Length: 323
Image 1 (cartoon, rainbow, N blue to C red):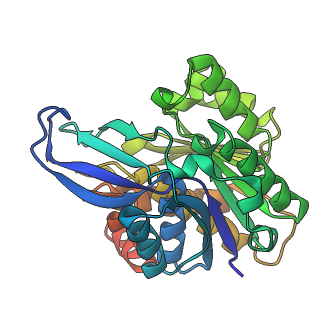
Image 2 (image 1 turned 45 degrees about the horizontal axis):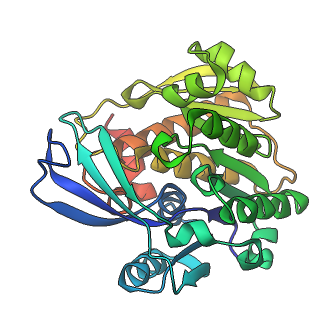
Image 3 (image 1 turned 120 degrees about the horizontal axis):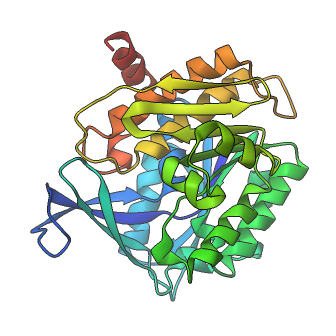
């Protein structure tokens, strides 16, 4: 069984091959496997962990491509269901000159949205030491109920729960629904990773310390706020600290946050190997974990596509040695 299990969307990213243009102007695209939880799963596997993925794709060529991509990257795909009616989710991505992105999603509905509670592989989830999920799978039924069902199974069996509420307003019916849905997922999380935009959206606060304290009031044990090339800020009962990043010339930031999460969970897993339930490491240890995670995210932004750009442990350690 896998030590770490990720649940959520897995999709095809079609990334513009030309930076600084809109989707209207983009002349061509690179096909790449993506989806935040799937990126995290592959990132963890590249860092040497035993990882499983739970999700759903179409019974067609794009679904085959995604299942094969995860399997080729040593992710357990036994938890992936197939849908004979809905198609695999697609996303077209244009890149600004600084590597920031603009998304257009095709999911009306897509197969990931049709995952049901009955399709959750309970043994896989129950045996995980860490269970990671996002907010996209909380948008609509039946996937919302499937996600909450899986998280509750993980918690009942003592797993650490990790949550990354990616803000994609275009996928929700309204800002109000997005905020309510994203906060609902947070109430089951031990570890929360968000960025500055998501912090202000969820709390109405842009101060890092005050915003993190507000989120901890939901019952989260550890809050990580990513700040792009500036690094990240962490807050827990063991301390709070800003950890500087690794400025690079970003080509495509797609997957950089997911790479950060994978490296973060890798570090937390290694610190909690013999401990259950999950305990937050001391601040000095968290700082080292965050330095490693910042580096992983920076490396991922240096080339196009998420999964193709996720680094190995050796690559991160080499990057840090020369930073």
